Image (tube, rainbow over all chains, first blue to last red; front, side, top):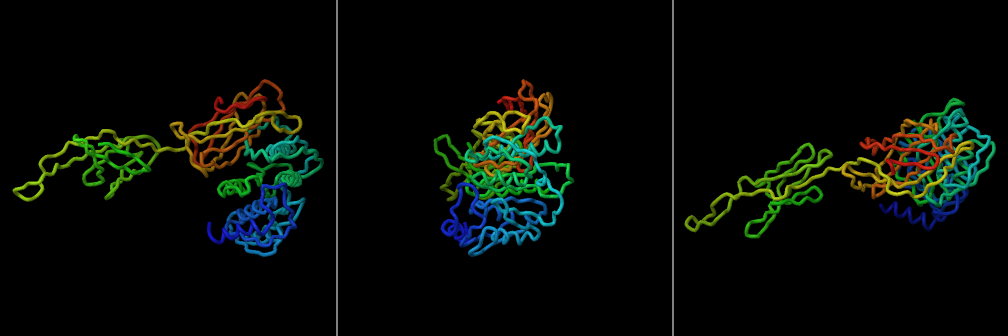
Length: 234
Length: 225
Protein backbone atom coordinates (compact mmCIF):
# COMPACT_ATOMS: atom_id res chain seq x y z
CA UNK A 1 0.00 0.00 0.00
CA UNK A 2 1.36 3.42 -0.88
CA UNK A 3 1.93 6.03 1.83
CA UNK A 4 -0.88 8.06 0.35
CA UNK A 5 -3.31 5.15 0.37
CA UNK A 6 -2.26 4.19 3.88
CA UNK A 7 -2.80 7.74 5.06
CA UNK A 8 -6.20 7.73 3.42
CA UNK A 9 -7.13 4.47 5.10
CA UNK A 10 -6.09 5.82 8.50
CA UNK A 11 -8.21 8.87 7.92
CA UNK A 12 -11.14 6.63 7.10
CA UNK A 13 -10.61 4.81 10.36
CA UNK A 14 -10.18 7.81 12.63
CA UNK A 15 -11.73 10.71 10.78
CA UNK A 16 -15.04 9.44 9.51
CA UNK A 17 -18.05 7.34 10.36
CA UNK A 18 -17.27 3.85 11.58
CA UNK A 19 -16.74 1.44 8.69
CA UNK A 20 -18.98 -1.52 7.96
CA UNK A 21 -20.11 -4.12 8.73
CA UNK A 22 -22.80 -2.05 10.39
CA UNK A 23 -26.56 -1.73 10.41
CA UNK A 24 -27.98 -0.45 7.17
CA UNK A 25 -26.83 2.57 5.23
CA UNK A 26 -25.17 5.53 6.89
CA UNK A 27 -26.85 8.89 6.52
CA UNK A 28 -26.11 10.59 3.23
CA UNK A 29 -26.02 13.92 5.11
CA UNK A 30 -23.12 12.86 7.32
CA UNK A 31 -20.06 15.09 7.05
CA UNK A 32 -16.72 13.35 6.68
CA UNK A 33 -13.66 15.17 7.98
CA UNK A 34 -11.54 13.91 5.18
CA UNK A 35 -12.27 12.00 1.98
CA UNK A 36 -9.29 10.80 0.04
CA UNK A 37 -9.63 8.35 -2.85
CA UNK A 38 -6.49 7.50 -4.81
CA UNK A 39 -6.62 7.52 -8.60
CA UNK A 40 -8.80 4.76 -10.03
CA UNK A 41 -11.78 4.41 -12.35
CA UNK A 42 -14.84 6.45 -11.45
CA UNK A 43 -16.88 3.31 -10.78
CA UNK A 44 -14.20 1.75 -8.59
CA UNK A 45 -13.82 5.03 -6.71
CA UNK A 46 -17.56 5.10 -6.02
CA UNK A 47 -17.48 1.55 -4.68
CA UNK A 48 -14.42 2.27 -2.56
CA UNK A 49 -16.00 5.35 -1.05
CA UNK A 50 -19.33 3.58 -0.47
CA UNK A 51 -17.84 0.49 1.14
CA UNK A 52 -15.41 2.33 3.38
CA UNK A 53 -17.94 4.91 4.57
CA UNK A 54 -21.07 2.74 4.58
CA UNK A 55 -22.90 5.03 2.18
CA UNK A 56 -25.40 3.14 0.02
CA UNK A 57 -25.53 3.87 -3.69
CA UNK A 58 -27.84 3.12 -6.60
CA UNK A 59 -26.02 3.40 -9.91
CA UNK A 60 -27.89 3.48 -13.22
CA UNK A 61 -25.31 2.68 -15.86
CA UNK A 62 -25.62 4.06 -19.37
CA UNK A 63 -22.54 5.85 -20.72
CA UNK A 64 -19.16 4.12 -20.53
CA UNK A 65 -17.40 7.18 -19.10
CA UNK A 66 -17.97 5.85 -15.61
CA UNK A 67 -15.94 2.72 -16.44
CA UNK A 68 -13.15 4.27 -18.48
CA UNK A 69 -12.34 7.59 -16.86
CA UNK A 70 -10.25 7.98 -13.75
CA UNK A 71 -11.08 9.92 -10.63
CA UNK A 72 -8.99 11.08 -7.70
CA UNK A 73 -10.54 12.88 -4.77
CA UNK A 74 -9.00 14.70 -1.83
CA UNK A 75 -11.61 16.67 0.12
CA UNK A 76 -12.10 17.97 3.63
CA UNK A 77 -15.39 18.40 5.48
CA UNK A 78 -17.47 16.89 2.72
CA UNK A 79 -20.89 15.30 2.87
CA UNK A 80 -21.41 11.94 1.18
CA UNK A 81 -23.31 13.62 -1.65
CA UNK A 82 -20.54 16.18 -2.16
CA UNK A 83 -17.93 13.44 -2.21
CA UNK A 84 -19.87 11.38 -4.73
CA UNK A 85 -20.39 14.43 -6.93
CA UNK A 86 -16.67 15.13 -6.78
CA UNK A 87 -15.93 11.60 -7.96
CA UNK A 88 -18.50 11.94 -10.73
CA UNK A 89 -16.92 15.08 -12.16
CA UNK A 90 -14.59 12.83 -14.15
CA UNK A 91 -17.55 10.95 -15.62
CA UNK A 92 -18.91 14.22 -17.03
CA UNK A 93 -22.50 13.14 -17.78
CA UNK A 94 -23.34 11.39 -14.54
CA UNK A 95 -25.19 13.16 -11.73
CA UNK A 96 -26.11 12.26 -8.16
CA UNK A 97 -29.16 12.95 -6.01
CA UNK A 98 -30.26 11.78 -2.55
CA UNK A 99 -33.28 9.50 -2.57
CA UNK A 100 -34.80 7.00 -0.10
CA UNK A 101 -31.75 6.98 2.17
CA UNK A 102 -29.15 6.41 -0.49
CA UNK A 103 -27.46 8.30 -3.29
CA UNK A 104 -28.82 7.68 -6.76
CA UNK A 105 -26.44 8.10 -9.67
CA UNK A 106 -27.59 8.31 -13.25
CA UNK A 107 -26.55 9.48 -16.69
CA UNK A 108 -28.39 12.74 -17.33
CA UNK A 109 -28.42 12.06 -21.07
CA UNK A 110 -30.99 9.31 -20.40
CA UNK A 111 -34.37 11.04 -20.45
CA UNK A 112 -36.68 8.25 -21.57
CA UNK A 113 -38.08 5.10 -20.01
CA UNK A 114 -35.68 2.61 -18.41
CA UNK A 115 -36.31 -0.81 -16.91
CA UNK A 116 -36.07 0.81 -13.46
CA UNK A 117 -39.23 2.78 -14.28
CA UNK A 118 -41.40 -0.33 -14.49
CA UNK A 119 -43.96 -0.26 -11.70
CA UNK A 120 -45.04 -3.43 -9.88
CA UNK A 121 -48.58 -3.60 -8.51
CA UNK A 122 -47.36 -5.86 -5.74
CA UNK A 123 -44.05 -7.25 -4.56
CA UNK A 124 -44.38 -9.75 -1.76
CA UNK A 125 -41.53 -11.92 -0.57
CA UNK A 126 -40.74 -13.50 2.80
CA UNK A 127 -37.70 -12.66 4.91
CA UNK A 128 -34.82 -14.04 2.87
CA UNK A 129 -31.20 -13.48 1.84
CA UNK A 130 -30.60 -10.17 0.08
CA UNK A 131 -29.60 -11.76 -3.24
CA UNK A 132 -32.60 -14.11 -3.18
CA UNK A 133 -34.91 -11.11 -2.79
CA UNK A 134 -33.11 -9.30 -5.61
CA UNK A 135 -33.57 -12.39 -7.74
CA UNK A 136 -37.28 -12.54 -6.90
CA UNK A 137 -37.60 -8.89 -7.95
CA UNK A 138 -35.95 -9.72 -11.26
CA UNK A 139 -38.38 -12.57 -11.88
CA UNK A 140 -41.33 -10.39 -10.87
CA UNK A 141 -40.25 -7.74 -13.38
CA UNK A 142 -39.94 -10.29 -16.17
CA UNK A 143 -43.40 -11.67 -15.38
CA UNK A 144 -44.81 -8.15 -15.43
CA UNK A 145 -43.56 -7.64 -18.99
CA UNK A 146 -43.85 -11.27 -20.14
CA UNK A 147 -46.71 -12.86 -18.17
CA UNK A 148 -46.50 -15.96 -20.36
CA UNK A 149 -43.18 -17.02 -18.72
CA UNK A 150 -43.75 -20.21 -16.73
CA UNK A 151 -40.31 -20.93 -15.32
CA UNK A 152 -36.95 -19.49 -14.31
CA UNK A 153 -33.67 -21.20 -13.54
CA UNK A 154 -30.07 -20.25 -13.09
CA UNK A 155 -27.81 -19.03 -10.35
CA UNK A 156 -26.45 -15.96 -8.59
CA UNK A 157 -23.90 -14.86 -5.99
CA UNK A 158 -25.41 -15.82 -2.64
CA UNK A 159 -23.96 -13.12 -0.40
CA UNK A 160 -23.50 -13.64 3.30
CA UNK A 161 -25.89 -14.97 5.92
CA UNK A 162 -25.89 -11.50 7.51
CA UNK A 163 -27.64 -10.15 4.44
CA UNK A 164 -31.13 -11.29 5.42
CA UNK A 165 -33.84 -8.74 4.54
CA UNK A 166 -37.60 -8.41 4.54
CA UNK A 167 -40.27 -9.52 4.57
CA UNK A 168 -41.56 -7.13 1.91
CA UNK A 169 -45.21 -6.47 1.13
CA UNK A 170 -44.97 -3.52 -1.21
CA UNK A 171 -47.65 -2.04 -3.45
CA UNK A 172 -47.36 0.12 -6.53
CA UNK A 173 -43.61 0.75 -6.49
CA UNK A 174 -41.12 1.12 -9.30
CA UNK A 175 -38.20 -1.25 -9.66
CA UNK A 176 -35.90 1.62 -8.66
CA UNK A 177 -37.87 2.22 -5.45
CA UNK A 178 -37.86 -1.49 -4.67
CA UNK A 179 -34.10 -1.77 -5.16
CA UNK A 180 -33.69 1.20 -2.84
CA UNK A 181 -35.89 -0.49 -0.25
CA UNK A 182 -34.06 -3.80 -0.47
CA UNK A 183 -30.59 -2.29 -0.17
CA UNK A 184 -31.46 0.10 2.65
CA UNK A 185 -33.12 -2.75 4.55
CA UNK A 186 -29.89 -4.73 4.36
CA UNK A 187 -26.59 -4.18 6.14
CA UNK A 188 -25.89 -1.74 3.32
CA UNK A 189 -24.60 -2.00 -0.19
CA UNK A 190 -24.65 -0.76 -3.74
CA UNK A 191 -27.07 -1.67 -6.46
CA UNK A 192 -25.88 -1.18 -10.01
CA UNK A 193 -28.37 -1.48 -12.85
CA UNK A 194 -28.81 -1.19 -16.58
CA UNK A 195 -29.84 2.42 -16.97
CA UNK A 196 -30.16 2.86 -20.71
CA UNK A 197 -33.44 3.80 -22.39
CA UNK A 198 -35.75 1.01 -23.54
CA UNK A 199 -39.15 0.85 -25.20
CA UNK A 200 -41.85 0.43 -22.58
CA UNK A 201 -43.20 -3.11 -22.73
CA UNK A 202 -39.84 -4.61 -23.62
CA UNK A 203 -36.88 -5.86 -21.62
CA UNK A 204 -33.22 -5.78 -22.62
CA UNK A 205 -31.12 -8.93 -22.97
CA UNK A 206 -28.61 -9.83 -20.31
CA UNK A 207 -28.54 -9.00 -16.61
CA UNK A 208 -30.64 -6.14 -15.24
CA UNK A 209 -28.82 -5.31 -12.02
CA UNK A 210 -26.33 -6.53 -9.47
CA UNK A 211 -26.44 -5.92 -5.73
CA UNK A 212 -23.11 -5.71 -3.91
CA UNK A 213 -23.59 -5.87 -0.13
CA UNK A 214 -21.05 -4.29 2.18
CA UNK A 215 -20.67 -7.49 4.20
CA UNK A 216 -16.95 -7.88 3.76
CA UNK A 217 -16.28 -4.19 4.45
CA UNK A 218 -14.47 -3.72 1.16
CA UNK A 219 -15.40 -3.13 -2.43
CA UNK A 220 -15.73 -6.04 -4.89
CA UNK A 221 -12.78 -7.25 -6.93
CA UNK A 222 -12.11 -4.70 -9.71
CA UNK A 223 -12.24 -7.40 -12.40
CA UNK A 224 -15.61 -8.67 -11.19
CA UNK A 225 -16.97 -5.14 -10.91
CA UNK A 226 -15.81 -4.27 -14.41
CA UNK A 227 -17.17 -7.50 -15.90
CA UNK A 228 -20.54 -6.96 -14.22
CA UNK A 229 -20.68 -3.29 -15.25
CA UNK A 230 -19.77 -4.04 -18.86
CA UNK A 231 -22.62 -6.54 -19.08
CA UNK A 232 -25.03 -3.93 -17.72
CA UNK A 233 -23.93 -1.31 -20.24
CA UNK A 234 -24.09 -3.56 -23.33
CA UNK B 1 21.06 -39.15 -13.35
CA UNK B 2 17.74 -37.96 -11.94
CA UNK B 3 16.03 -34.60 -12.22
CA UNK B 4 13.95 -32.61 -9.76
CA UNK B 5 11.48 -30.01 -10.93
CA UNK B 6 10.60 -26.98 -8.84
CA UNK B 7 8.71 -23.96 -10.13
CA UNK B 8 9.93 -24.45 -13.65
CA UNK B 9 13.59 -25.03 -12.86
CA UNK B 10 15.56 -28.26 -13.40
CA UNK B 11 18.57 -29.29 -11.37
CA UNK B 12 20.22 -32.43 -12.79
CA UNK B 13 21.73 -34.49 -9.97
CA UNK B 14 24.49 -36.96 -10.91
CA UNK B 15 25.07 -40.04 -8.86
CA UNK B 16 28.24 -42.01 -9.46
CA UNK B 17 28.63 -45.73 -8.83
CA UNK B 18 30.86 -44.90 -5.88
CA UNK B 19 27.90 -43.20 -4.16
CA UNK B 20 29.02 -39.62 -4.65
CA UNK B 21 26.68 -37.12 -6.31
CA UNK B 22 26.77 -33.61 -7.63
CA UNK B 23 24.53 -31.15 -9.49
CA UNK B 24 25.60 -30.25 -12.99
CA UNK B 25 24.07 -27.12 -14.51
CA UNK B 26 26.47 -26.92 -17.44
CA UNK B 27 24.41 -26.45 -20.62
CA UNK B 28 27.34 -27.64 -22.74
CA UNK B 29 27.31 -30.97 -20.97
CA UNK B 30 23.60 -31.85 -21.05
CA UNK B 31 21.14 -32.24 -23.91
CA UNK B 32 17.44 -32.20 -23.07
CA UNK B 33 14.83 -34.23 -24.93
CA UNK B 34 11.22 -33.21 -24.24
CA UNK B 35 8.76 -36.04 -24.84
CA UNK B 36 6.31 -33.56 -26.34
CA UNK B 37 7.86 -30.16 -27.11
CA UNK B 38 4.40 -28.76 -27.79
CA UNK B 39 3.74 -29.04 -24.04
CA UNK B 40 7.11 -28.07 -22.56
CA UNK B 41 10.75 -27.52 -23.50
CA UNK B 42 13.91 -26.65 -21.61
CA UNK B 43 15.64 -23.32 -22.01
CA UNK B 44 19.36 -23.78 -21.52
CA UNK B 45 21.15 -20.85 -19.95
CA UNK B 46 24.47 -20.86 -18.17
CA UNK B 47 23.97 -21.99 -14.62
CA UNK B 48 20.36 -23.15 -14.86
CA UNK B 49 17.76 -25.00 -16.90
CA UNK B 50 14.35 -23.40 -17.09
CA UNK B 51 11.24 -25.31 -18.07
CA UNK B 52 9.16 -23.44 -20.64
CA UNK B 53 5.48 -24.34 -20.35
CA UNK B 54 3.73 -24.03 -23.71
CA UNK B 55 0.36 -25.78 -23.68
CA UNK B 56 -1.78 -27.97 -21.41
CA UNK B 57 -0.81 -31.62 -20.98
CA UNK B 58 1.76 -33.95 -19.48
CA UNK B 59 5.15 -34.92 -20.83
CA UNK B 60 8.57 -36.19 -19.76
CA UNK B 61 11.81 -34.29 -20.02
CA UNK B 62 14.66 -36.74 -20.69
CA UNK B 63 18.33 -35.84 -20.84
CA UNK B 64 21.70 -37.22 -21.94
CA UNK B 65 25.32 -36.25 -21.44
CA UNK B 66 26.95 -37.11 -24.78
CA UNK B 67 30.57 -36.19 -24.09
CA UNK B 68 31.23 -36.45 -20.38
CA UNK B 69 34.87 -37.21 -19.75
CA UNK B 70 36.45 -38.88 -16.79
CA UNK B 71 39.37 -36.53 -16.38
CA UNK B 72 42.66 -37.87 -15.00
CA UNK B 73 45.89 -36.13 -14.19
CA UNK B 74 48.76 -37.22 -16.38
CA UNK B 75 51.95 -36.93 -14.30
CA UNK B 76 54.22 -37.14 -17.32
CA UNK B 77 52.41 -34.43 -19.24
CA UNK B 78 51.63 -32.40 -16.14
CA UNK B 79 48.08 -31.89 -17.40
CA UNK B 80 44.57 -33.40 -17.31
CA UNK B 81 43.46 -35.71 -20.06
CA UNK B 82 40.25 -37.51 -20.92
CA UNK B 83 40.93 -41.05 -19.80
CA UNK B 84 37.56 -42.38 -20.97
CA UNK B 85 34.03 -41.25 -21.66
CA UNK B 86 31.33 -41.79 -19.06
CA UNK B 87 28.06 -43.58 -19.83
CA UNK B 88 25.40 -41.34 -18.31
CA UNK B 89 21.72 -42.21 -18.51
CA UNK B 90 18.57 -40.79 -17.00
CA UNK B 91 17.33 -42.65 -13.97
CA UNK B 92 14.05 -40.74 -13.65
CA UNK B 93 13.02 -38.31 -16.41
CA UNK B 94 11.42 -35.11 -15.17
CA UNK B 95 7.64 -35.25 -15.27
CA UNK B 96 5.98 -32.03 -16.36
CA UNK B 97 2.30 -31.17 -16.11
CA UNK B 98 0.95 -27.99 -17.61
CA UNK B 99 -2.34 -27.45 -15.82
CA UNK B 100 -5.31 -25.44 -17.01
CA UNK B 101 -8.78 -24.88 -15.58
CA UNK B 102 -10.94 -27.73 -16.80
CA UNK B 103 -14.13 -28.03 -14.75
CA UNK B 104 -16.23 -26.47 -12.01
CA UNK B 105 -17.18 -29.06 -9.38
CA UNK B 106 -19.43 -28.95 -6.35
CA UNK B 107 -17.39 -29.23 -3.16
CA UNK B 108 -20.14 -28.85 -0.61
CA UNK B 109 -23.72 -27.70 -0.14
CA UNK B 110 -24.03 -24.74 2.22
CA UNK B 111 -27.81 -24.57 2.40
CA UNK B 112 -30.81 -25.66 0.37
CA UNK B 113 -34.57 -25.30 0.59
CA UNK B 114 -37.60 -23.73 -1.05
CA UNK B 115 -36.68 -20.84 -3.35
CA UNK B 116 -37.93 -17.27 -3.03
CA UNK B 117 -40.22 -17.07 -6.06
CA UNK B 118 -42.75 -14.58 -7.44
CA UNK B 119 -46.36 -15.17 -6.50
CA UNK B 120 -47.88 -18.10 -8.40
CA UNK B 121 -44.55 -19.91 -8.57
CA UNK B 122 -42.60 -22.26 -6.35
CA UNK B 123 -39.24 -23.94 -6.62
CA UNK B 124 -35.94 -24.89 -5.07
CA UNK B 125 -32.72 -23.15 -4.13
CA UNK B 126 -29.34 -24.70 -3.39
CA UNK B 127 -26.24 -22.78 -2.34
CA UNK B 128 -22.99 -24.60 -3.01
CA UNK B 129 -19.26 -24.03 -2.97
CA UNK B 130 -17.80 -24.61 -6.41
CA UNK B 131 -14.18 -25.56 -7.01
CA UNK B 132 -12.19 -24.99 -10.16
CA UNK B 133 -10.41 -28.20 -11.21
CA UNK B 134 -7.57 -28.91 -13.62
CA UNK B 135 -7.61 -31.59 -16.32
CA UNK B 136 -6.44 -34.24 -13.81
CA UNK B 137 -9.15 -33.41 -11.31
CA UNK B 138 -6.80 -31.55 -9.00
CA UNK B 139 -7.78 -28.30 -7.31
CA UNK B 140 -6.89 -25.31 -9.47
CA UNK B 141 -6.18 -23.11 -6.49
CA UNK B 142 -5.72 -19.73 -8.11
CA UNK B 143 -7.54 -16.61 -6.90
CA UNK B 144 -8.99 -13.75 -8.89
CA UNK B 145 -10.15 -15.80 -11.90
CA UNK B 146 -13.35 -14.36 -13.33
CA UNK B 147 -15.88 -17.14 -13.86
CA UNK B 148 -18.92 -16.59 -16.08
CA UNK B 149 -21.37 -18.98 -17.69
CA UNK B 150 -24.19 -19.67 -20.09
CA UNK B 151 -27.10 -22.04 -19.39
CA UNK B 152 -28.86 -23.99 -22.11
CA UNK B 153 -32.17 -25.59 -21.21
CA UNK B 154 -32.58 -29.05 -22.73
CA UNK B 155 -35.08 -31.85 -22.53
CA UNK B 156 -37.20 -32.66 -20.62
CA UNK B 157 -38.33 -29.22 -19.57
CA UNK B 158 -41.32 -30.19 -17.46
CA UNK B 159 -40.93 -27.08 -15.33
CA UNK B 160 -41.33 -24.80 -18.34
CA UNK B 161 -38.08 -22.92 -17.80
CA UNK B 162 -37.90 -20.15 -20.40
CA UNK B 163 -35.66 -17.61 -18.73
CA UNK B 164 -32.23 -18.32 -17.28
CA UNK B 165 -30.03 -16.23 -15.07
CA UNK B 166 -26.26 -16.40 -15.25
CA UNK B 167 -23.60 -14.56 -13.33
CA UNK B 168 -20.03 -13.44 -12.89
CA UNK B 169 -17.95 -14.74 -10.02
CA UNK B 170 -14.39 -14.45 -8.78
CA UNK B 171 -12.38 -17.36 -7.40
CA UNK B 172 -10.80 -17.08 -3.97
CA UNK B 173 -7.20 -18.12 -3.32
CA UNK B 174 -8.32 -21.77 -3.24
CA UNK B 175 -9.99 -21.51 -6.65
CA UNK B 176 -13.45 -21.60 -5.06
CA UNK B 177 -16.58 -19.47 -5.06
CA UNK B 178 -20.06 -19.65 -3.50
CA UNK B 179 -22.99 -19.99 -5.86
CA UNK B 180 -26.76 -20.22 -5.41
CA UNK B 181 -28.65 -22.29 -7.98
CA UNK B 182 -32.41 -21.84 -8.17
CA UNK B 183 -35.52 -22.80 -10.09
CA UNK B 184 -38.97 -21.20 -9.91
CA UNK B 185 -41.91 -22.58 -11.88
CA UNK B 186 -45.67 -22.41 -12.14
CA UNK B 187 -45.48 -26.21 -12.48
CA UNK B 188 -44.26 -26.64 -8.90
CA UNK B 189 -45.13 -28.58 -6.85
CA UNK B 190 -44.79 -31.55 -9.19
CA UNK B 191 -42.42 -34.44 -9.88
CA UNK B 192 -41.27 -33.00 -13.19
CA UNK B 193 -37.75 -31.91 -14.00
CA UNK B 194 -35.88 -29.62 -16.36
CA UNK B 195 -32.44 -30.58 -17.65
CA UNK B 196 -29.84 -28.02 -18.59
CA UNK B 197 -26.24 -27.68 -19.68
CA UNK B 198 -24.02 -25.10 -18.05
CA UNK B 199 -21.09 -23.76 -20.09
CA UNK B 200 -18.48 -22.01 -17.94
CA UNK B 201 -15.76 -19.62 -19.00
CA UNK B 202 -12.69 -18.61 -16.99
CA UNK B 203 -11.26 -15.17 -17.75
CA UNK B 204 -13.16 -15.34 -21.05
CA UNK B 205 -11.87 -18.79 -22.08
CA UNK B 206 -14.14 -21.80 -22.42
CA UNK B 207 -13.92 -24.37 -19.65
CA UNK B 208 -13.71 -27.76 -21.44
CA UNK B 209 -16.06 -29.58 -19.10
CA UNK B 210 -19.75 -28.80 -19.43
CA UNK B 211 -21.89 -29.28 -16.32
CA UNK B 212 -25.25 -31.00 -16.52
CA UNK B 213 -27.83 -29.51 -14.17
CA UNK B 214 -31.14 -31.14 -13.22
CA UNK B 215 -33.75 -28.81 -11.76
CA UNK B 216 -36.67 -30.24 -9.80
CA UNK B 217 -39.22 -28.68 -7.47
CA UNK B 218 -37.46 -30.11 -4.42
CA UNK B 219 -33.87 -30.61 -5.55
CA UNK B 220 -31.13 -29.35 -7.85
CA UNK B 221 -28.26 -31.62 -8.89
CA UNK B 222 -25.09 -30.55 -10.65
CA UNK B 223 -23.20 -33.27 -12.51
CA UNK B 224 -25.05 -35.87 -10.48
CA UNK B 225 -24.08 -34.31 -7.13
